[in-house]
Amino acid sequence: MENGVFKLRKEHVNFKKLLSLFDKQLDLLHKGKPSDYRLMADILYYMTQYTDLVHHPIEEVIFKLLAIRDPGVVENVTELTKQHQTIGNSGELLYKKLENIINYESDIKKSQEIEMLGRLYCSTLRIHMDKEEQSLFILAERLLNNDDWEKIRSDTETKPDPIFGEAIEARFHLVCDKLAQPTSDK
Ligand SMILES: [Fe+2]
Ligand SMILES: [Fe+2]
Image 1 (cartoon, rainbow, N blue to C red):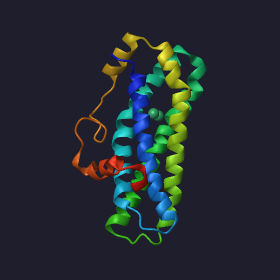
Image 2 (cartoon, rainbow, N blue to C red; image 1 turned 120 degrees about the vertical axis):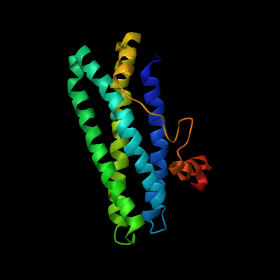
Image 3 (cartoon, protein in one colour; image 1 turned 90 degrees about the horizontal axis):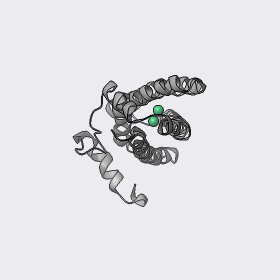
Image 4 (spheres, helix red, strand yellow; image 1 turned 180 degrees about the vertical axis):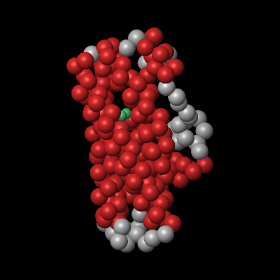
């Protein structure tokens, strides 16, 4: 099996692209301009269905193994694993709030709350990913061998990435259109 960290790093690049799109919508909210709640909800849906359910569990299997190999990283592993929970919960909450606005409510009273929760979500996830890239990912590349990666693969479940994988799921077409636009038009 190829070094699994390579895939995780690639996924972080993808997640950061989505967070940038999300940030742009928050900037519009901040300026009182119309923002695309559907786009924001779809990004959050991806985060809760792929990042939280596929990417994070794979990391947790890797991190557990690292904690056995190097007890010095136990604290870091515990902290990053807890953050997965926090990120999952706040992503789900924000997703539900966005769907509520789309389906039932006017955005006028809610825009400040969405902006605040959205900024917090984006910064927490960015800081989390940076910390992984600068600590446990480097350690995993150093400490884990081919047999470890084989075992990790057999101990984890995966599913195709619905945005960046081979087939784009229909509900993410809007997100993909936005990703494909030149930066100035996003
Ligand atoms: Fe993570
Ligand atoms: Fe990660």
